[in-house]
Length: 156
Image (cartoon, rainbow, N blue to C red):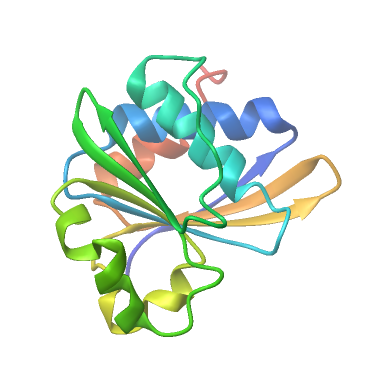
């Protein structure tokens, strides 16, 4: 059974730090699946991830809520940020270039819309808001990368 870690993210900075650690550990072919209700911080995580992966804190990262997908060229290769909230059926992913995007890295908000297209061994991040804070459940990836992701750099 895969490990699941639970993290308290007291503020946006903690969410951004988790995203930066994920970006440092990400590889081409990875899928990062973000779950949680509206306003949970999924887009904020993706924005921080992409800025860290691009090594550009000013990178413009618009929400793909209406376009459904935004593409980026990063030092590690192509990345695509999908927001599937408005998707009706997994078959619609073909029109969005899902198969081609899977050659690179994908970040997916509302992954329940993927259906049978959900990648195996994806990093799954579930965010539950609590005011400005969030509770995160993290699972997937291999044990070494997952532990590196959830380590608290403030702990000795």
